[in-house]
Image 1: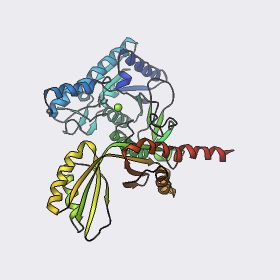
Image 2: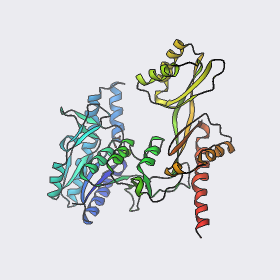
Image 3: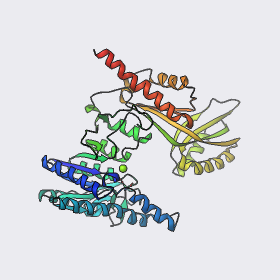
Image 4: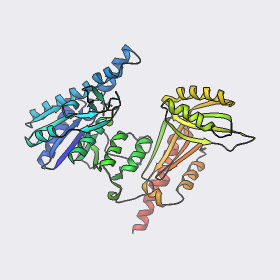
Length: 412
Ligand code: ASP
Ligand code: MG
């Protein structure tokens, strides 16, 4: 049985006309001989408006009730989707998360999938039905409704594809993954293939195509993903195991994350245990710390900086202020006007000079680097927020547009 999981995002099911458009994609796949499982998000804007309703009652809605509320968005969408398929002559049955079941842990509003039942779906497929599964929803072992975090329908789709041994199509409102955000870089190009690892880096550095957790899931189970637009027939981007990505370019994409803050602890005593104290306190408060820089020590004192997500900056600052007092640091300074620009590519593992070239491009444009962090396949620089778009454009030109020209020249 050749199974295809087709996931439709919020804009792809934004109104009844769009649901019908999505349903026709399903019928096309059936005509090609696939057995199709649909996963749908809530209609565009629905989850946000449910969140806003709850916030009108209280700033801290009970998380269990939040899940009961948010899961209604997807429940509504799958019922309408299944009705539309039936109208078009295609037998379909909608299923909520608990009916599949998608079994999760008990962490309300960001639950993780533990087990995916496949029997009911397989039976429906055998009988010639299209199962239309609500994305984003799960159920705990004691029958509580959970949700998988914002963007969680992607993870539902990938998890189902893994469990069914299927290929996973992600239908969205953009044509695929780009070498940079086309709103910033008009010359950005659609990438035909990208490895899981590159996609995970890009997604965690600001590219918002898919929920990161879904790509991690795909990597673990080798699920082949095709991200594409629901408004055209055009091929999108395949997210694949590294061995299958033909072209191993040095830099696959350039991204920027502007929702970062930098916190500096000034004049901390330079002795063992100080860094441990600061970062242990942040860890205990579940704050994710990103780039850490410790300056060279002078007369037994040093400055220590790190970045956090801006939404958590206030909380982080308060915690660090307390620790700073205890350890006798001079002061704590917070800067919210920073951005992190990054280049990502598998080829970086086996090429040299990439970091130097990146720093040179920034220097040439008068952009100062406040902190640097690297992994095997990425380099990130923290810069002043006002240069964010300039940096992306210049790096894209140097690493992606110019590389292309060289290939064309050499290829003749
Ligand atoms: N409806 C949920 C959200 O807006 C889940 C999803 O669309 O993937 O985050
Ligand atoms: Mg989404």
